[in-house]
Length: 111
Length: 114
Image (cartoon, rainbow over all chains, first blue to last red; front, side, top):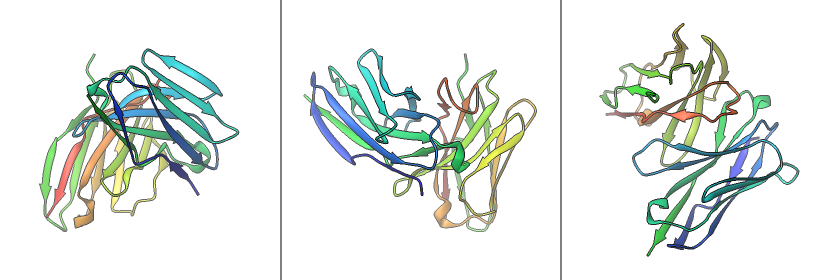
């Protein structure tokens, strides 16, 4: 079956660094995506990994290890506006789906 | 550049009725996918279309159907509504089905079934 796991909640303080982990078990693998979703809003695209390694985009970085079925999203210099739900999603063409999403990690940033 | 447009934003329907939701993708995007989001289940895949062809379908009953038109706009229909169909329905568009450049989501249609 298809399964994507990520922690339900995390808390951090402004200016800190936080790492949100995601593990997946899928039939196939055609890419891993991270999305940010603020309450009541649409998910917004953060990153895409299809090869092993680290992708950096400003304060956000995403890492992928396909052999371990593991990814993480690293957020640096946290700001209050980073309080949101972070969604890990895998595309698995072998399973005949588009994106398979984890349940999301709710990040709360405090001052 | 206009984003993904979903209409209507909010909808209240009665059990047993049917509903049609619309999604206009970003100009030039030919791939559209639909998701249902609920607090308990999170985001679940419904359908995916590319160039008017359904590429993939999620594990939802036959009451859920969709289509894509030649201008890439897509509609999804839910017949014989049940209370459990209350959810946020999101559509996403991308340049290519594999999403190499990411999927852009619309703001969603909030469906309430009473």
